[in-house]
Image (cartoon, rainbow, N blue to C red; front, side, top):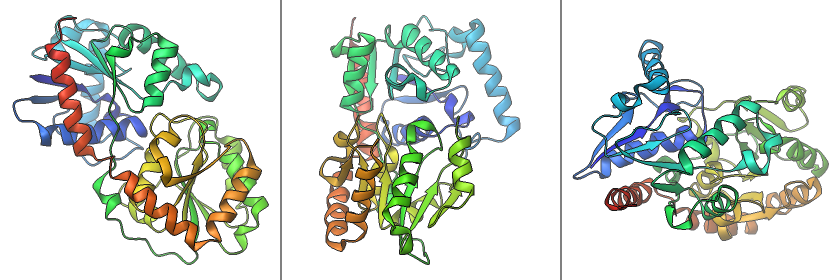
Length: 359
């Protein structure tokens, strides 16, 4: 089997999808036996993972972006020649004729919460759904919650979409805490409306916990982030905004947290939560979307729209070593199911099943 993965996200500024694509490719190649794993467009070698820019140098990136444009202007059959399966993303807008088509469904927020996205994102995701997802030979969903959303909102045949959970990089399971002057709560994620940071800042201010703890916020500026960034730059009591934190520093920062707090309004999988659990850090997260499914008994849940609920949970967790131990241990155990080796093995089985299907 020749499998071609659309890895265009590795050339772009991207977070969760880029993490998924980079790690999946890495582990598919490690797990392959009689399979050939290629990456589109001509991405058989990449540099280290970074979310703020391409994983390649500019002179390596520009020709590959040009290849993407060629695919979208009609050269997709030539650029995918030899592939038995083309696993597509929303960057390629033409469907090749020969290979079977698959894709990963990450989330359906453009349908459920369009106000939390740019007009460009909404258009791209809706076109992807109409042109690719509804016509694909098989689909991967990163959680059962995402699978059910795709069935309900897009009319996807349940038999064509399979849940394969994403993984957590091995370094989080073995991470050593980075030194810190005071114990801290931690949030990791892009500064954008869906991550719900303003409610977290309100809860932190009301809790009074800043007298003894810090709240560290790590993540790049996203869209519609001006108001939240303005609050962060005023340096609220006990709040430290770190900006984007690279992959080499993130495991230690995560492992050093007294609690990981993530009040997102919707997630398809929730990488930061799974990473914190792998590092045995107690988690507070939202009681919505896939987060209870992914975190299970490894997290304390709150109503993400209630600053009072979030403030109370922070107080309970940060003032009780017993609770922190309980949730940290449960989360670490839960995270064992999110291994990239498992994801790659299940994904290869999925691709073989699609290739053998006659539909």
